[in-house]
Structure formats: structure tokens, C-alpha cells
Image 1 (cartoon, rainbow, N blue to C red):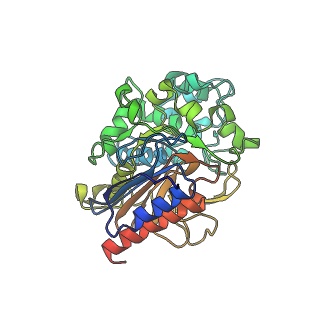
Image 2 (image 1 turned 90 degrees about the vertical axis):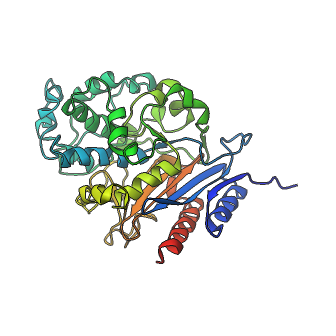
Image 3 (image 1 turned 135 degrees about the vertical axis):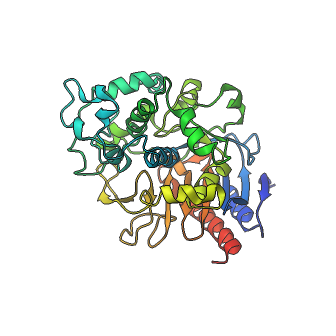
Length: 388
């Protein structure tokens, strides 16, 4: 007898997204959670499958997921908000906020690295320090000190290479110092973006009592490549997955490059506001105007593929045919995928926010056909709501 697919639907007009979710799980996907907002209103919120690869507990819309680099877009929004308020300057060198970054034997060229370089992954410091362990990655001060001791691999601005993990501390430590904080900036980012938008289920530093709500991640297919510069930016022993990101110390830590833990509803709700929805009077949409336009289109030195970037976001680009849906060409989308398959994005034309969270991670991530089928169903559902 075929085992029934568990499904939890809070909102799904017409049921097409639910059917796509069930089909994906029936085809072997362990579990998926999706959400979409339009102009401040949640219009889709559903989940199907199980909370882990053991398939022993049904997945719900309230479960939390490690979303990895989906985190980058939320952190970028906080930096851009503080820049608009004059608390940081995107073109001021990092050393103006973080003098220690420009001192010591590895200081060459660091006095010209800016927040803008970090947001566009062109700072020249994608590599994680060689002696980083999972425990050290969870130690904010250790990571900040270790990156001060790392040399730049290229002149800031001359090329782009995915700062998979280092993005978080290279933005977060200057932000912490500029705001006068004596703790890592996770709570400040939540106040500025997620809590301000009424989306409390996005965490940078998970409270221990919320641990039971977090899914157990699985991995299927070949592992992510750890060769060359990719392996230095994303070392195999620190790779996204349950072994590292299921650790209590890592979950509690603030890792603004890849450590966000969230529901799909929280991510979609954030992106809805970032598109300029009615919430907050469209203020964030105006703040992000420059951040969501195309700033760089490069063959990324870490990823080995052409990537179109705004400031902290992937952006839809008619000139880039390599990017997978929903950032394909042409589109008015911006957002960020996470390792393994989670993705969050906004659609400026529809003033809508979307998110997909995934239990079963793969090396292809959000470009997997099973995820794209669900994404297309989600986009069609929103198109039915807005009329195009």
C-alpha cells in the first residue's frame, strides 16, 4: 500500500500548490514548506512530507528550517537600512569601523575593502581560515580575529567570488561596531528587519527552547564540490547539513552568512515588504531601490558560473541566461538561494514575496527540477491573486 503524504495547508487558493507539494514528496522528496505574500497579506502557506529523512513525523507550516544563504538577503536588508539612516556608509572602508581588520601581516589591500565590496562578493576574502572548526565558527570573536589574519586573494572590486560564509562576519563585525553593540548583531538585525516586519520566526541565534521545532536535514546524491577555491570558501568539514548546522552551539550562534533559521512564511513575509508592499508604507522598497538593481555580472571565481548580483541579492537579469528560475531572464526578481534547496525572493512587478524550505538537500539545490516545479506552482498561485 502506498503511504499517504502528510500535508499541512493554512492557505492555498485553488489547491495547486498543495498538489505540487504532494507530487514532489510522492516522488521521493522528504519534505517541503512554502509560502507567499502579496501586499502584506499571506496568500499561500503550506507544507508536505516529513520533518526529517527518517519520515517519522509530519512536517507543518510552523516548523523551522536552517535556510543557509537565504540569510544573506535579510542581512543585506539590515545593512541597507542602516546605510539609508546614515549609520554606516557602503563606500567607507571597513577599517573605519573595524581598525583591527587593517592591521598585521595580512593587512595588504584591506584598507580599501568596503561594505559594498562585501555585498557584491568582490572583497577578495572568500576563504575560511584553515583552522576553523564548527565550534570556532560558532565563536564570533574568534572568527572576527581569524579573518583579520587572512590575506586578500585579489584586489577589492577586480573580481567576484562567492563569500559563502565570510560574508557574514565581514558585514556583521563592522555593523556591530558602528551600532555600538557589545554582542554579535543577530538581535539587532532581527529588530531592524524581521521583527519590524512582524516576522518573528526568522532567527540569527536560535533560543534553546525552539530546538524541537527545527527539522532534521538530510542529504541525497553527490556531495557539494570542495575542490579549489570553492573548498576554501565552503570547507567540507563545515558544509551545510545536519552534522554541522544541527549542533546546538552552531544553532545558538550568530552566523550572518549562512546561519538563519526560519519558516517559509517568515522569509516570504520579509521579501514581500522588501518589494515595497503596503506594510511600512513602502519605506523599505525605497531603501532597497539601488540594492536590487544589477551591480555586477561576473563569472564567479568560487562558483565557476556567471552570477548577476545587486547589493547582497541575486537579481533577475535579461543578460544572464545561466541563472535558474526564479532569477532567470528576464524578470524583476531579487533574493537569495540557500545551500541544498531553500530559496527566498521578491517579485517587484507583483509586489510579492516567496519562499521554499527543503528537508532533503542536494548539490543542485534550488535548481533541482522538483524544487522548480513547486516554485512555478507558487508563482502561478500568486499570479492568480494579482491578475498577472
